[in-house]
Image 1: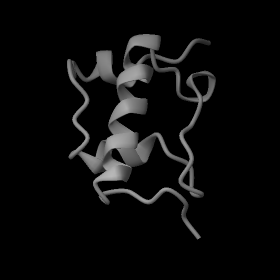
Image 2: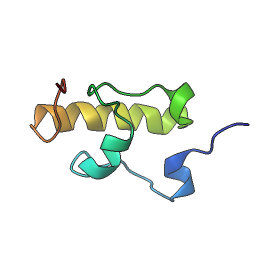
Image 3: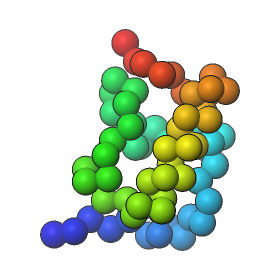
Length: 67
């Protein structure tokens, strides 16, 4: 069964880097991004998510590596 895209399901048009609660759902315990195959996110939102996570890391809102 194919997973439904989280962002189109919840009617989210834009992924904001300041919304770390949502971003943390798509990051594994080590702080690495989870692939599209695992999460079921569409390609469009995966690109937005990657950019948002990278911005949040740069701004110090999320860790690059979790210990």
